[in-house]
Length: 375
Image 1 (cartoon, one colour):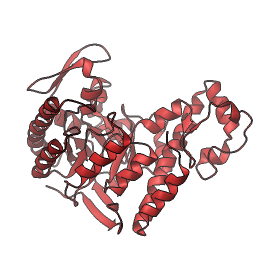
Image 2: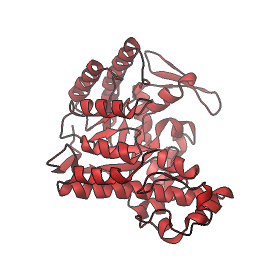
Image 3: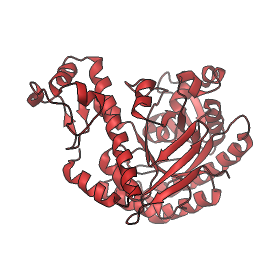
Image 4: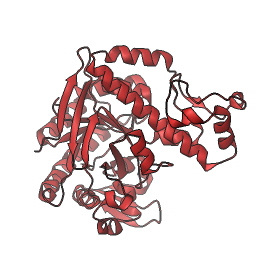
């Protein structure tokens, strides 16, 4: 299997490391936070904004793009990059999270996941094989296997069934990917560790993933309602089961404390919709912790959003103005707060990379979290 990842430096006091992903649309420095563009657009952000901040990779979602606009129109432009005019890398989720989050619309069968579209009620079947085919049509630089995720406190028997299903789906997806990979499709395939919150199931799943020997590995089934302490315990436990030479991706984390703890445990990639979702609700990340611009105390505050941030929003717009925009229902509120939140996380990870290179990551993490008050 092709090698797409190179470790640059390992921190001397933790499992944190820096590295480089080598992908069809350019190199990606790791650790990396990836903005989520579910339907081919990072909400409230232009591609020029994303490039200006410095993002080298974004996400798209196979489930949503399959339903709308459909693969027919995207394949006519030879893939998602051209369709959305994004010339850097794209990772596509398999739709596995939608199997989890839209459970009332789906049924798991031996073939795959059958579901009713949340848009028009039409019936569809996602199989490990056709999900690979769809992602090849999207021409994503990294595609994910179809998996079956279960929520926190799932009974053991049900969690075991989901893990066994995920194992079977991995082998089927791997076979299809190997058939389709070549001159026409250059993207990489990541397998996913499941097992819920049972360590023997995590070990079983990790063993199958390691044996499959795909270019990268994701740790799934975390940040699904469990307490933060449980998240850290199972993240650390699972990461230790994985080969160091492959890139590791934890799906669905997007707050500073989660990201920094993931980096400490040797995670290279993470994504979340949270930065833009919070922005649409008037919330922003700051060095002192999350800030709600809706509060009355900011009505006459002419200071910037975060005095420690050098993004263009913090440089040019006051808290009073940003509050005014939000209270007035202006679209610009979501645009500016989304830009700031994504810049903040990108800059945090950039600083973390520098700290790792200087063997001072734990000091950096401690100093940051000492000021930061979590949501």
